[in-house]
Amino acid sequence: MTKASPDVISRAGELRDTITEHNYQYYVLDDPRVPDAEYDRLFRELQDLEAQYPDIVTPDTPTRRVGASVETTFEEVVHRIPMLSLDNAFSDEELRDFDRRVKDRLKASDDIEYVCEPKLDGLAVSLHYESGVLTRAATRGDGYTGEDITANIRTIPSVPLRLRGDNVPELVEVRGEVYMPREGFEALNRRLADKGEKAFVNPRNAAAGSLRQKKPTVTARRPLELCAYSVALEDESRLPATHWEGLQQVSAWGFRINPEMRRATGAKDCLQAYNELMDKRASLPYEIDGIVFKVNSLALQQQLGFVSRAPRWAIAQKFPAQEELTVIEDVEFQVGRTGAITPVARLKPVFVGGVTVSNATLHNMDEIQRLGVRIGDTVFVRRAGDVIPQVVKVVAERRPDNAREVQLPTPAPYASPILCRSRVKWWPAVLAGCSARHSARRPSGTMPPARHWT
Ligand code: IVH
Image (cartoon, rainbow, N blue to C red; front, top):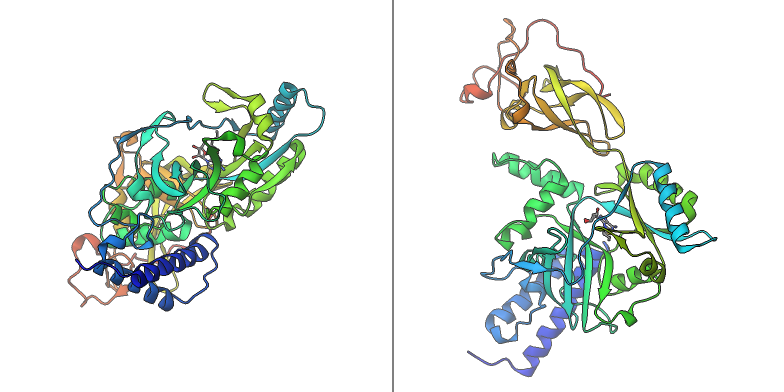
């Protein structure tokens, strides 16, 4: 093996720094500084150098987010500091009660300052950095022991492999949420459906399924992101005075923190933050299921302490659920202007995603088959953001004896075209070759009226 010259070593170091910087601009700040083609050239140059001189490879090199033959071990990991959960508030009154309890316990007469953070709907992870380098990532597990998922976490581009800046401690633990943004989730589900594989019910399941992969190469193809929300240091004297400043420090180390985070003083201000975030909810590019309020002062947090498995200094106020159970009372077929036919589930009305829903799309016949839907089934209905309500899962155990298969409408004598495959168009009958399972005929008589989602 040829030994790398000082010039090669220095060029590789330069490339590593430049690529890491471009990654940070792109994945953490959402603000790319170079065109993709330029980035690709730099990346290729580093890859070539490292292939030629394997001894110059460093643990934090951006080319090795996916190791050659590394598998995720899922070995048991004991959390140095337990990963607790949060108590929930389901109403404004419960939030006011929480604030009152905090004030009483602290014997405070002034209003308390809180940090308000979107409650991302993903999975909590713990990341250890030693001398600034990512050395271990773990799931929350039961809060006391989790699983080692380092190889999978390394594939997430917004996870720094090395902390930025000079103020890097010997040992630090950063915690945050791994989640899948809506767009990536929908693209992933389309990809899975095209391959005839089972789609994920929601972005949270998709994120969990992606982290559970044994092969990091699979995780690497999943559009995951990490948002940091807390920091713990071995040397606590180095911690700033407030949670807010801790977040700024984490951001300076190169993590993505949520741009919707803000501070609020007193319960009234917190409730306003809740309403403002609720108004934004549907337009955010990721799913949130509530807002978390955390006492900002770390000294006050310490005074308040914990009760059972949750801190007394924080609470999550929940938003209306985006998934609920209901029953499919019937399935009808809607014909769009282009002739595309969409099966629509008529539902027992259910309050989901902030509105009452009585119809949900079943997309197409393939989808009905994939889900295994029958009339009478109890199903998960999901309404997220502005997306039309969808049936995403059947609860097999709740199927009644009289559940009926979904029948396609009977054909019209005049047209007799064959409905082919999923994106059902009116193909002429000569277009045979599509399987009988997927074929159908045009309903007789008038088309069912288009209905609005309620
Ligand atoms: S703080 C002791 N902050 O919610 C503090 N959690 O119900 C514990 N989560 O397991 C966590 N966004 O997965 C915190 N901004 C946020 C969060 C957040 C989402 C999740 C996290 C945690 C669960 C607790």
